[in-house]
Length: 443
Image 1 (tube, rainbow, N blue to C red):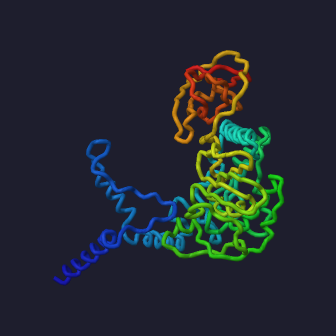
Image 2 (image 1 turned 60 degrees about the vertical axis):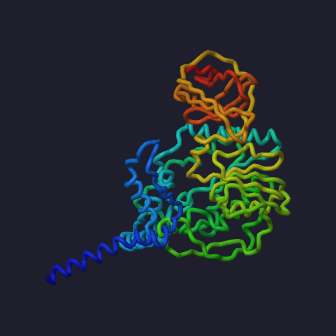
Image 3 (image 1 turned 45 degrees about the vertical axis):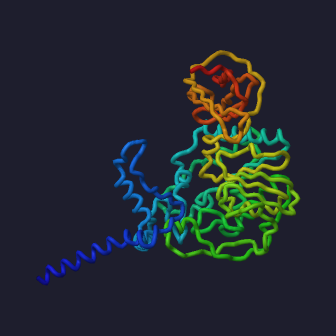
């Protein structure tokens, strides 16, 4: 009887512990969302007009993502794994040496396991060249830059089991293409490496205030101006790293980070919720005119520095980038982190195509061509022409032109085809180079 009583008590305690998360979800609501998490939506009983036979498994995933104390359990598990094995409990974060954390999405760049093809590099550079041409036609300067991955700058704290590639990375391989096409760019790597101490956070994937200021000064110099923001006084402020939050979602640890000591000298226009907003407008007493900047999360700090230098600025996180936002004279800066350079080839900019003279056609090539027409809600006067073709039959450095009723336009190339924003047309003929000669592409 005593043994049965102990067994019953143990079962009751076990079932109670198992019920705590679910009961907590009902009583206190869902657990907080962790950094960069995408949670499962509440399932529907129907799907595509039929019964959703996966409702129970979908509901299970919904509860798993939200049960009470979930983040606390995840944090405790991650802390235990780090303490015992020195490993990260999440696939998104690499647990480095001396407390350094790295974003796992940069590992392919670090090891050189998935390099961009030569066609991808050419397409990336060509799309930037087309953007620069579009900007110049409207009286605007253009500048591209790519903040280096954290482990590109600071490989010494990466786990020793990951071998760094001896071959050049995508950014190093892209720069010669940019030079060949005359694209204005700013290489930030030597600028950041020259700093006396690391300018990226230990527990974050981004630079600190000093790194951002160094990047600001380099960009302004590349545009022909002068700036000394990095030489001003900085103060230390607690910072919660994004990688730390991914690894320990309920953790409260911060690390000191440098921020500019003085108050900012620009004003936000309109309602700005935070630096992650898709669109931010600013004004200031800066003397560098108007700025249109396309940026990613590295612009969370950098946009504040640049906002002080330009009298008015628009900062956009749209991808593909919206070159159609360019109103006229001024400056366009495009900032894209090293790990996402492939986006330059795969996500062409939104802008009207640049017109070309009709090239001399030497024949036809079978390229399995397919063309689709679409619309863009913000460009009602233009048609979006997207096409796929067998790029293996084209020259690696072949532009792609589309012949429409209104003329010849150079399309933004992609590794598998092209995208073009141009006037509506009854006909569309695609031209590309093969063996150095311009040929019509056939389906």
